[in-house]
Length: 106
Image: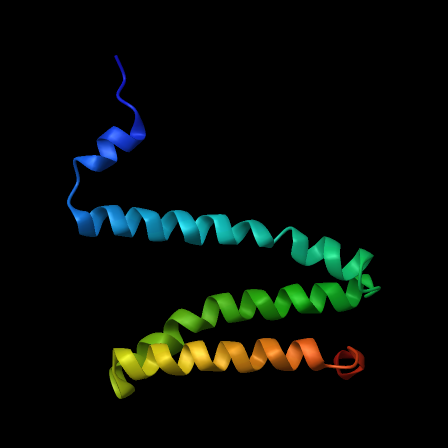
């Protein structure tokens, strides 16, 4: 008989369980990607071209951020890199929320 995933996971050491939980949260967070096409088109009135550029920027950031994070970690250390990343993400999210339009993308 097959054992349930929570019981199997309970046998692993705590660091492994935390890693699995972190991976689960990360994968659930990836569910936002389909909405990055629907919401800008439908709710914000962006054109298909503007939405495509938004997704392109997301993709470029997704590809380059691990490399940039590695370089910064080597130069600044883990703690400073994480702090810079978290603060920078907050500042950029606030700036995007306060942006009056997407006309700069044209």
